[in-house]
Amino acid sequence: MNYIDEIQPEQIRTVEKRRESDEVFVLLRGRGVLFLGEGALELERLYPQVMEPGKIYNVRQNVWHSIVLTRDGSVLIVENQDTDRNNTDYSPILPRHHPLIMDAARHEQPAEGEE
Image (cartoon, rainbow, N blue to C red; front, side, top):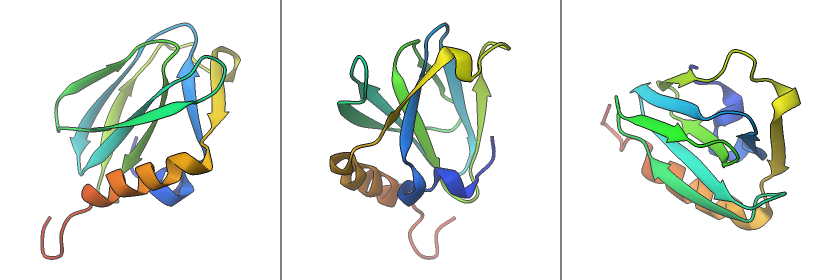
């Protein structure tokens, strides 16, 4: 997956979880933050994981998650071929989570003159 506007920090509105399989993420370029969440039926707590290029991040089934990438970002996502809306749950991100998302993403933006 390459950068798209929907994964900018201010655009993130939901998290998702796969009910039938794990999902793997690998940051290929740019900078990224993988957000992992807790909660049974809906998102309760959210934790940022700053991604390292080339490192494998295995998100276990039934774990809420979302990702933010910089504009030059690209991430490899590996999931079961039959993963779709029928075996994925979605939960809204609550207003109390937005400052955490914005702060974590801000720290991952290149400083002026960097890149």
